[in-house]
Length: 302
Image (tube, rainbow, N blue to C red):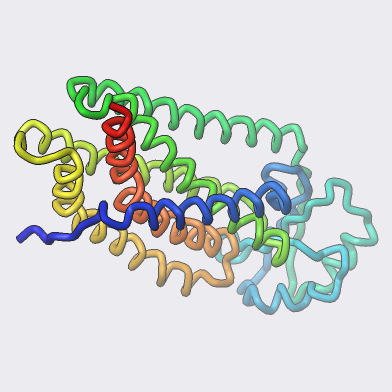
């Protein structure tokens, strides 16, 4: 049985919530900036290879907590007996290196590697290119897939709506990351970027599913208004989108809990969780109601 909800009735409220969230996120992003990790900014990686069982990450973190030069250091486990210490400084002095090594518990061997800022800059450029390509590919796909649907909304408007939702779905997690980076020193690393790219895919998928149902109903339902067809389509796809989002969150919650000491996975799950929630909200309550708002505006001008 298809549930019946009026998703269009309170669309102005949903738009207001989205606008406020985007403005706050944009303010956070541009005023605080992103705290980029050494993957993007360059720095040093110290690999600690323990001869026996590796100490708990909390023990390692506590042992380094009083070293000023180690503030903001990322601690990442590697394999069963290794741990990687990531520091934003490229040229670590011998004194700082000795402080870090002497503070660590247990017996181990060490190696140090420097990451050039040139490599980090190339990585930033490639990440930006991937996101832009995803945006353009989505716009082109929707424009072609909905080419046969020209009334009452053109195919390009479906693409524009999806692109706006994708911007919405990315700017909010980025705003949260900027806030957490400024106040809690959370850094943007490769897993976080992976989560952002996964959000892009999730956002595209949800919007395509709903828009495709709208296209099918436009061909079948000749007696309904465009607003009624969109609302009918949202009711038919709501449970599917909700189940998809809920299933992903069911995986992310234990992942966040069990890997709470593994910073890269911890923030990957955090960003994914925010993105899934925001993506669900935009795909159901924003993208399709926006099409209805455009259509209503066009009819008022006639």
